[in-house]
Each structure stands twice: as C-alpha cells, then as structure tokens.
Length: 87
Image (cartoon, rainbow, N blue to C red; front, side, top):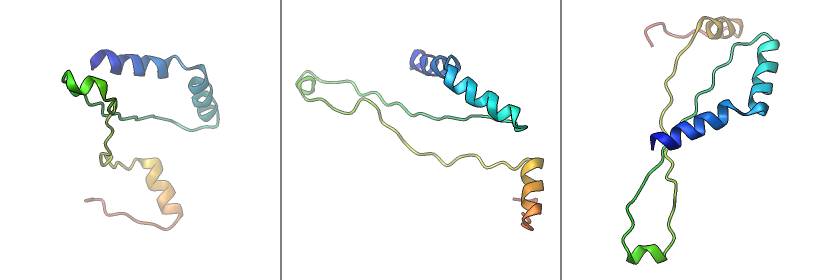
C-alpha cells in the first residue's frame, strides 16, 4: 500500500504539466495547495474467484476538512457574507 501511495505521489510530483499549471497560478499571485485522497482496497482472492475478474480499486468519498483562512474571510466580506467565528 505504501509503495503504491509513494508511486502515485511521485508521478504527480514529477508531472511537468502539473508543475507548469501550478507555476502559472503562482505567477498570477495566488497561493495554491493540492489535496488528493484515494482509498484503495485489497481483497484476497480465493482460487475459485481467480477466474472471475472483480474491481481492483475501491473508492470512497470522505467529508473534507473545512478551513477558512484570512484570504477566504476577505473574499466573503467583499460579498457581504459573514461567518460565525465559533464555527
């Protein structure tokens, strides 16, 4: 599992296309962060199941963490939207 995660991370890090797009975003004056989540499931196959292909990847959706930074607050205020600080 760790090797697969490392391979995915390395392929994204080494992508010239991703690096180019991130560079253009930064040149436009924005800070950027990228969060990707993948859930990979493994099931041990029995000999009888070997002949029947099944799903190799299981995905799930997880509620994202919600954070608001100072730039977000400034943008919301410009739209006359207030959020509760306790939230």
